[in-house]
Length: 148
Image (cartoon, rainbow, N blue to C red; front, side, top):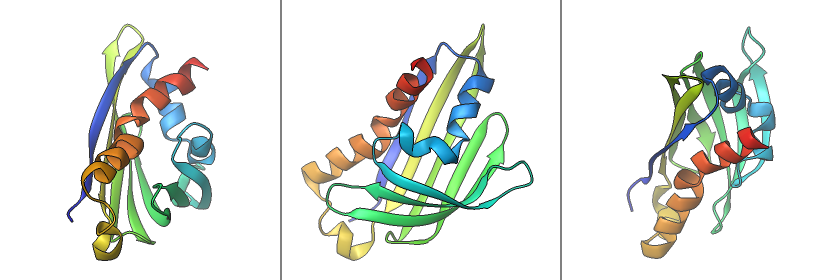
């Protein structure tokens, strides 16, 4: 079993600053990201943003815990990399592109190495359903959050 992941994007009728405010706010991420059960900010950077966060991810086959370091390149990119957790590796990011006229393209990327044990459970249809839940659904969840 290899890595699970990919990327997906969405064009939004919102300015980049409004989209940035949502994707960089780890304190409220569990409110709109369907697979996140809870999130705890362990450390903050000088701007008060989450610098280290612990999340629980509902992967359906198992609830996974992960502690990640977060980096920011405001207002175009927020990224995280697992420091420790139930997965062998996890890396993710939001990349934002200002399209002009108050529109933004948001691209979500996630790569997970589940490791051998969990990897044995994630095959075929399960792998595709997991990719849908963890990657492909995320941009539409962002659209709904911004609309709501």
